Length: 421
Ligand code: SF4
Image (cartoon, rainbow, N blue to C red; front, top):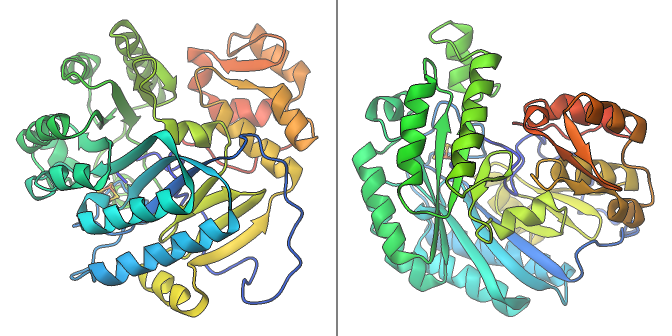
């Protein structure tokens, strides 16, 4: 995955492996919770390999000297078939290939997975099929094949237009390769988005304004703009503890966030989620499924899913995933029913990330438990951090900078899902 934001994909790296429900034992199935999104379904496919490990990255990504593409194709197809058998009759609205670096997948595997998913489920006419790619020249050479395989949206991990910043971020591509890959992508796919990482050490408002101005001039209708965050266990975390570099302070980072909001809004690509910007109608439909708390199947190492009131987690380590598949016919490490309170809590955490906020009423109807404490919501409306109408709550720009603490403040129960901003 290209972004430093762990909650954006079907991969949530916080869970341990091999704990929870043992799927080889027989247990009575938990009662399913009611579904919010009719028969719609999104599919997340995790490809766990990268050519090298970026020092800020805490995603489930692994470097291996050799990858048996055929074995992985078979494994992912089998994992997909397992999910499809548990989710009959659904309409597939999106597929998202994330990672890792899914542009390193053989295009024939991508094609086989798309063909299988769209035959196992009914495919929406306007199905969105996104693949994350890194912009080095070898990967860009595959774009035409990936488009022919059925991918209709590319999300490119450009991260910076500056070679020095790219070296600092440990990226395996240059700024020139980034621009070239973007050109090839725009010629190959109907929809293209790219990621940038900002709030790097020493980054000034002037410098970020110039970078963002350039990004907005490149003609894509979607941008993902992430602030650098230092995640525990990464090489950057060690470097910060050794004082090899200093991150921006909270005020400097907030000023850059506000500048981002202003510039993208005036260019017609306002934030529709904390870090995601699009022209109206060009939002990522796949990610909207997460934020609206719809069902999604997650396959591949470390992938998370939410289906029929259950949370599912696959084995993270590629070798463990393959042996689980050989043993059980699927790669699931944990599967557990969410209580109505947990599910309502997750819906709040996800929904408040959206610029449109969350309508609390349908969540209350769906799960039958209170989701927010209205007196606390009103207090935060008074302080300028939230706005609300009858049942919909939104964060203001100031509120978005304090999302974690706002969630802790307004939830009717203590939130259990961490949020990165
Ligand atoms: S390319 Fe870098 S940031 Fe993306 S998943 Fe691989 S190691 Fe992580």
